[in-house]
Amino acid sequence: MLIVTGGSTEPGGAIARAAANRSYAVVLVYLEDQCGAEAAVDQIVGSDGTAVAVRADLTDEMDVERLFQETVAMFGGVDVIVHADSRGSRLIDRHAARLLRQGGAILTVGDVEPVEPSLADELRARAISIEGLTAGPGSAGSAADITQQLRDFDRWLVAR
Image (cartoon, rainbow, N blue to C red; front, side, top):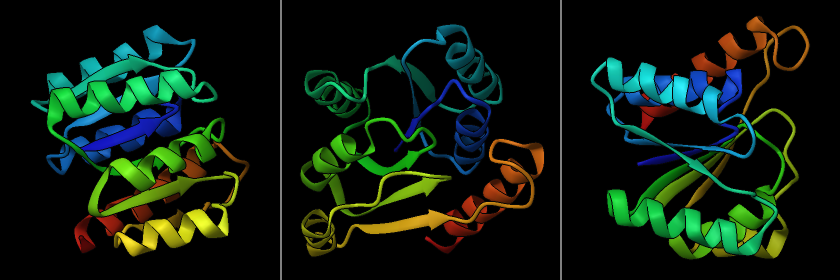
């Protein structure tokens, strides 16, 4: 089970589709673009994947807690978090230290705040890896960038 922040953006939606193609259930997190998030969910479900969109302000403690509660209630747990949106990554990572399944992973796409050393130690103590997906040529969010990120993400999924 995978949570993708920025699920209504092109990088977030593309990564969610790639994960769903590998049989991951996906929660696409959005704040403002409900139509974009629901369109990504419709594409995944239309391809026999499992996905839901959840609105959450990732800078709000209660919203992040609710996001994890709803995800666990729907899917039984969280294996991977992909940050396709840099807002709120530290707050999500703090919750991940408690709520990700043992051996899970946090993946970052593009520019995201670095994980605080003490939090990184907590995550590693639970065998949760922290990975950065490399950006491809072109400006952030460009088609070439997203294509490279998807290749990296797919290699990471295959290696698991």
